[in-house]
Length: 179
Image (cartoon, rainbow, N blue to C red; front, side):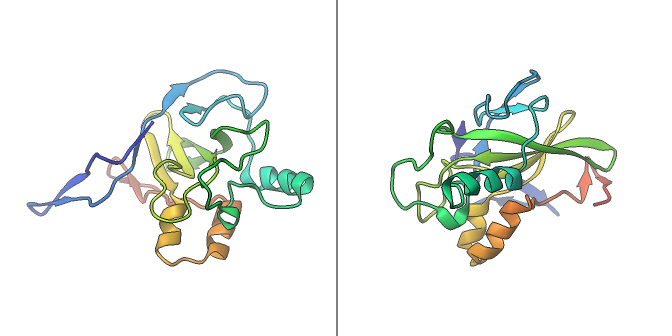
């Protein structure tokens, strides 16, 4: 579930700052062994899912269809209809890898979804990649559609997508973490 009607408020030096725009996403946490990586929808975070990286997926997709998937920014569709192909006709979260951030075990996820919206914020799509720590929650991520609005080239965004670049925290609970 995604909402864009919630505001973030930060107090810095006695002054309050309110966000102009904030996408809030809700996920269901499950710990269930799965056989295939695409058995869960995009509202689920499951650290027991089989791993499947973006580059593995795009390599296989390109081999079969001779193009990048609709998940890639370079192929975003301006139509209002889905360009997803069977059996991946719905948005999904894939577990990509496990890594360590400071003293925490973190799990990297990426979302498979089409673009549908050719301009403006794509809150329906939501977060593209994120880092999840079971004891804490989501600690980093990337919204690729946001970076495309900032003038970053689609080639750079595609490079970040294929290598699963995400924004990482410099601290967790006020404790610095080494990147």
